[in-house]
Length: 226
Image (tube, rainbow, N blue to C red):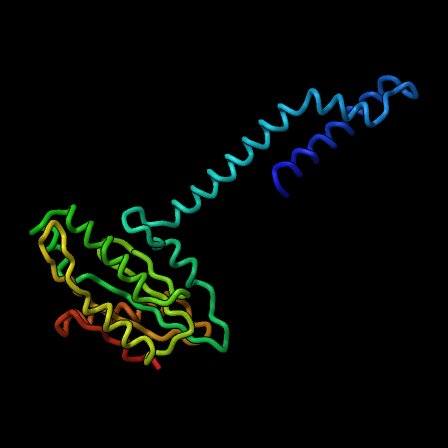
């Protein structure tokens, strides 16, 4: 219901309440509903407008707080809490998803060499690239630090492989005229059916550490994935 509709509804309620008060006070000598409605409108319109404005402001504020609670402030991506809320629900039986864990290679070295401000810019730039590398239905989130997670919706490992490799290869990021080569290590696992998300992410994380141990800048699929 729009603002005008809500205002009219509130005025009608005020008119009815005013009529009830009139009936209880004067019995058969009470004014008509139209007169009571007019009186309620004359007296109550400022109250109605202020009440609806306050309600609208509170609703917008509540929506903003919900968004802030689910968003990583640095990158604008969903945060860990929001990502886990998405993936905790079981898949449909006819659908399989792929979950990825992504970790920036040698990120501490970047921070130590160029400073944390440059490290933050790298995280922001990678977040932007992730959005372009993934499909509209996919979800990417910053899990904390230099770690990200990806949900490839309705995908197979063979479909995930080139995406994971593209993410792993990263690219050059130019910050203050200094090109920085950024690569990532990626581990991914198939989630088939109603397997708990925590279990799949654990397998993806194990594959991620295998990618790190095998030289970084690469993607590895969980060994026990289908």
